[in-house]
Image (cartoon, rainbow over all chains, first blue to last red; front, top):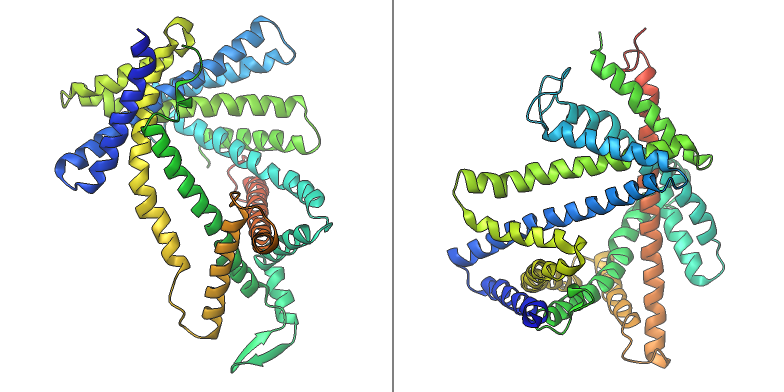
Length: 234
Length: 212
């Protein structure tokens, strides 16, 4: 039993890891079907993991209702909305008043998606504009050289991407360099330079570190050094 | 004449949009209602996506139509994950996680090297050609990548030369964070404008919320 609980998962991780690693270097029908099969298997497993998350969410709200915790009435809204959306998509018949069933166009699922899910999601993210602005006010106070750089880069990015940036740039005098005309301030040009040169380079530096770490972690997992995925306990 | 479903739907959508906006003033019951409704709807949506895009074609159809019973293995492993809620059987979920994480570790190594690491390196070490501007940019990129890497390299103490290079690295990192922040802010503002446009256009002449 101890073998099944402790060693067997490490063996599974090792065999799966090695198989999927070396199949890359042996291009063949078999290695393609191993890759395809593994990706499909993972999608199924992740599907079940999602159910676990949903069960946990429902459990949280049911406990809240049972114990009548503050705001428990809103938990009814979550559960009712979940059941409605789930039935709308899974019911094997068209809901009365709607022409189609499941996820097809003209179904209740599609109607709920268009008139509740999309507006709420877009508004939720757009409201972040206000909070991000207040966070910016606090973060952008130029108290140090680093904060000043952050402030300048963000300001150029924000102004350079809107029509007022063009107006400001066009209002500044021009000069000639290497036979070309340039504006003293050209926010559009500065914005693309910022994105494509220092921003891309710093991101590249960070990403190179991330990729190397990912490879190191992957090797540790395959060889059973990293076992945190097994969780605690026996 | 606007179809009744569309008319009612637009009114609901506008109402929900305003409910969500009410959070700008402060947390309130209208926002809480919208927030909980969004949670329920999005989880229900996710269940459907998982069912119709994964479980139905890869498990049910595979068994029914192609008689592929191999899919029972990941299905059983998936059920093992659900057993985490039973403390005495929770250890079974390790099998599923081992296959998922171990397999993905092996899958990701050649993928990272071939598709991510080497292309980034090759973009950093491009030939110096194309005129004065591109060459200067190429040098800046090389210096920025190197100094950023040094900033995150903790095996050497950041003093003297290493410290100076690492200070240069933080300059580039800050410019990058600033640019990303500005980009994100503009993205959010675009969404905000989109929501205001939605409300205004719904009630404008020919809008989907107009029944008069």
